[in-house]
Image 1 (cartoon, rainbow, N blue to C red):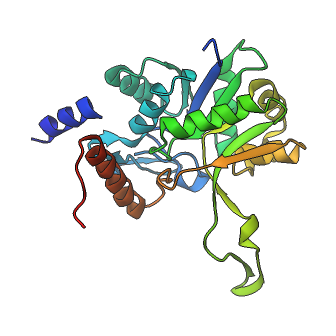
Image 2 (cartoon, rainbow, N blue to C red):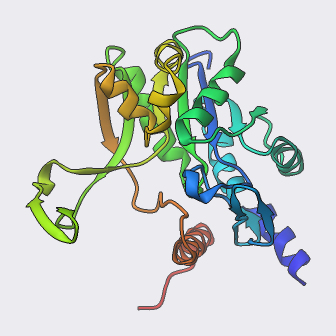
Length: 267
């Protein structure tokens, strides 16, 4: 029965711009290192629990791969994670833009550096999109907007999608509030993030010690004096980090499926 349902859902589910994309994270995750989390709970590694999330009968990573596959501006997809699992997933799911997979690093930035090595002899001006595979609900529309912003302002050193922060944010230490930040200037940043390959290569030539603490690629570009633009993100582009996120992700996918089939929610 589950196999039948899975099969049904599977069925539903330029030279203009030379864009490469690689996705951090895979079917394996090392939670305490912050690498991209993707998909169960039955396996263990020496670094910690491996989680394999399945969203609507499909590995979470597959939803992200499909979004990049369906984005016209993207010409190739590279992944960072478990090579055998990604190869199998891409082959079985018809991800034709999939090109290769690099092993994950001990931190997010070191995984990015491994992914960059897959780009080989690509031109320095090639636009690269770096995406966290745990944001499996990314859409082709968002990917396209990030690319358009990067192409539209060649002087920019990077582009990131982000949402304005609606909560009040306070800085605290040892349980005591130190200050309240002006939330009109705060943004919650998402992925994919776009950069020129030559710039990333230069930044990631830095020492592992300096790279290890970075929480996203844009922060490294900023520290190097780069100018990073913001485009509007999407509230549905959530990051899977807890069981509650998985429930929300399934609800979002169900709503998308209903919209495709003209199903209206009852008020």
